Length: 419
Image (cartoon, rainbow, N blue to C red; front, top):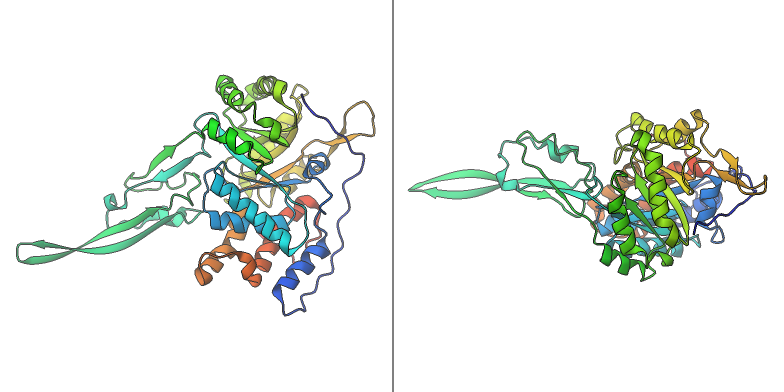
């Protein structure tokens, strides 16, 4: 059963911010910043953000499993007011997200975002890892894979080994290290750049039975199913395996690419599969150009074009629409130019009930990049630690996150424009 709800309130005006950082206590400055901007209160449910068109989701990454970074990212973006945090369907990762959320709420009494896990019904770009044996790499390789990795998931060092040949001693160099598996999120940028074609792609499909058990533990609020949209029988198989556990959820999302004329038809087929067991809200994640938001301005064009395509169709099934794939600091401006940002349409029986055409935006690679710079600096200085213990870093990370989240939430960001 699909659920509908309505709210006649308009999008709130920007909060007027007058923030001064006179305190020598950086954590107090963090608290003052959050209170001044006006992050959503505990009484404001995330589903209202979908209706207003200012929903923001943080994508930690379906294959990103660095629990220290995930905990710190979740802490920072909870303070910034995101509505949802999407992560791998792994108990240790989910635990890290929840720990980050609760650590944020100990700093300031703030609303709890929903926790979402991601699964797939078939091979998918989001569910893969890079892999290679560093001993097979030529010692004189200039290591372009290490330089291009946005997650700092490749670490190579030269190691000298001694080999005795008769009475002579020859010094040879080998590379050690390789892919740091828990940090790799499968962007694939290292595959084509390896000059010796040594890097392999390892794909996987999340176990449906284990996922169903995880949903029943009440540690997550939502699930997202990644699908190609081309083979709905695989989607049905996964949904049937999950059907008894979706009653524990607040939201079911489906992430799919733009397949042209077949997109709306596939969405309707998938909705008909879900509808008999759908007792919560549903959302369609329009995945324009996967894992590319950190590349630059042009990366968001495909996500916006996808939104234009779907919103133009009167045949689309029920459910909120949310952008992803290439989303970054330029996405809101792109939506505004198309007349899609926080544009409301009348729905339901009463004309005063408004529903946002685009529910919101999910940020992945770009969101991790801007806060990741701070986390990387902190890690180099202090090792693996909670960011709340280093309030100067927390304040810097929060400023970055607020600039991004605030562009959707209509915060009045007081620190100037950042790119």
